[in-house]
Amino acid sequence: MKILIVNCVYDPEPVVSAQIGKALAEELSNNGHDVEVLAPFPSRPAGFKFNADFVKDKINTQQLSKTLKVSRLPSFICPKSNVLGRLWESISFGWHTYRYILDHANEIDRVYMNTWPLFGQYGVAKACKKRNIPYAVHIQDLYPESLTNKLPGVIGKLAYPLLFKFEKYTLKNASKIIAISRKMKNFIASSRAVDADKIEVVLNWQEQKDFIPYGDTWPSTKRTFMYLGNIGPVAGLPLVLNAFIKANVNAQLVLAGSGSKLEECKEIAEKNPGFDIVFREVPGGQVPKVQSEAHVLLLPMIKGAASSSIPSKLPAYMFSERPIIVLADKGSDTANAVIEAQCGWVGEAEDVDWLANTIQEVALEQDASLKKLGLNGRDYCLRNFSKEVNLTKLVWSIVNE
Image (cartoon, rainbow, N blue to C red; front, side, top):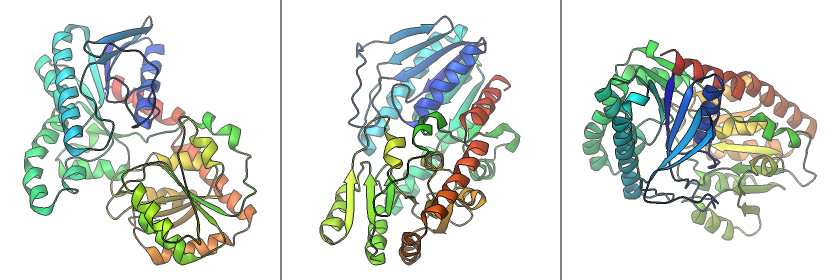
């Protein structure tokens, strides 16, 4: 078949969706399908340097093999978190993909999209509907809820019904919907009135091979608790700092990454100079190495954030063979995965007292106990979050629409 992949991020961008898109494109191509990828110019994460040389005002196409090519569309990009900028980015990429699909419809048998909600998705859905092309939509987060929940009360309530129309159109006309957790599948089926049989669950994966060189590494420093990822509002990291300070243990807390809450976290640390709190950047491709410097990894999420999806850092944490302390909604897929794997400790979202007490307990745990929990997580990850298992599911979902 001639398959078009629409990805809002793509290799060499190191983010999870970009690597999923690359793996999917290569697998479909290796299976004999004629594959083209549509993507914007690389821009994620913000501040990351890309060496690729593109002509910014026209489509740039690179033929990677006889059956695989990547076309970069000259749409607007907004690497930094900005509501209006991200909105225009979604609209712009949606418009460019809409025009491209209309112009090349006779070259496309099927479309897969993992693109910006809501307007990026809508552009693809509208064009496919016009040209009667079946498409699969990969849902990484629930919109418009993820957006309207961040808006002031009245504005969010007014915006929701308007934005929901775009979401409803995209899902209603899709031949296949791909959700990243069981909870997300159930929520989409009930809240969008979508037939559950049309929804496949494919968990986001990580490349285990990137973590293997560090599997036997165990830090000789004092007990180190680490969070690695986006230091934004969803993680609730100021709460983590307050819990670490309250625990008052002989340990180190490392926050690795960047984001909108970084300065607030640094201010808390500066006001408490007696505690060993370290901030560091994560160079591209260095996630496994940085995580290997921790004894325990932290996965905090504010209330409601874990209700319908599993963060991509969870399998990355598990492949690092480190125990995990989770703060998440009770009964969420994230909490259940850690409980099922027996690879750490799970508390209710935003529970500072529980986290402080747990840090005190874990700071005194023997290394052997921590290593055993880490191995439990790795084994669970291989069974559930591995590339081999989930890429096969994803390919099947697209080819067998």
